Every structure is written in C-alpha cells, then in structure tokens.
Length: 159
Image 1 (spheres, one colour):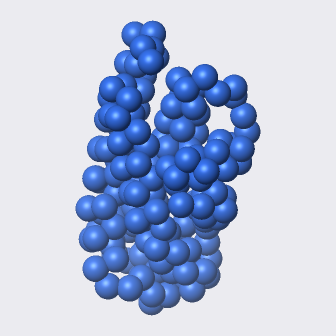
Image 2 (tube, rainbow, N blue to C red; image 1 turned 180 degrees about the vertical axis):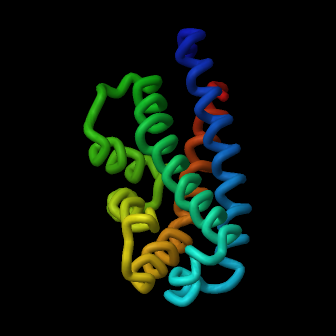
C-alpha cells in the first residue's frame, strides 16, 4: 500500500525517533541499574548529582519512548492501515492482537508508573526505589515493542 508522502515521512521520522530513544534508554538503563536500585540509593540522590542526573535521564527516556510508541507511532501506524482513531487502550488492545506488544495491561501499568518515578515528588525512598526498579523491569517490554513496530513499518516499506 502506498502512503501519501507526508504520512510516510511522519512514520519514518517516528521510527527514527523510536530507535534512537530506545538505544539511549538501554544505555541509561544499564548505567542506573548496574546494581539494584535500593531505597538507600534513592535516599542518596540529593547528595549524588551524577546519579540523580542518570535517574532523571532514565525517567525521561522511559517516558519519552512510551509516549513515542503508544501516543504517536502506534496511532499513526494504525491510521496508515486505514484504522479509525481510537482511545489509547483500544489501540493497545489492537496492537496486542497483532503481536506488536506483549500485553496492553502492561502498558497501562507503565503509564501509571511514570508518575511514580518522578523522584522530586516522592518523599519515601523505598517507594521511589520500587518505582524505578519496576520501570527497569519494563525496559525490555518497551524495547521489544519498539523493535516490533519499526519492523512492521520496514516490512511494509514505510520506514
């Protein structure tokens, strides 16, 4: 199926952004989680500017990749396939049926988790550590979804 030039260009741009953000997230993830993220590490963020910056980068990249995939690329890909606009949960359910993502429920959990990972708003280091560690656990889910969606674009000759 041939797409209008503007739509194909948008898909290509999104695919490049997804691949870049995915790669950067993986690098940051390896740095922050070279050791488990404990409540003690979370409590020490105010005194460790380098770690605080890496944590901020992790949260920003995690959130950005999730937004790029779920709020931008997925709806754009579905539109290119002739699907009508739908709510995010409906798009995620559709993506799960197409095996582009593992589980729509995981995505909804990741969306809620983003807010918990913004450490400036969390006073309890144990809560922050738990949220960051759960975010780390979801990185492979995001990376796999990024690869699957970009592969679908490539398979169709759109990226």
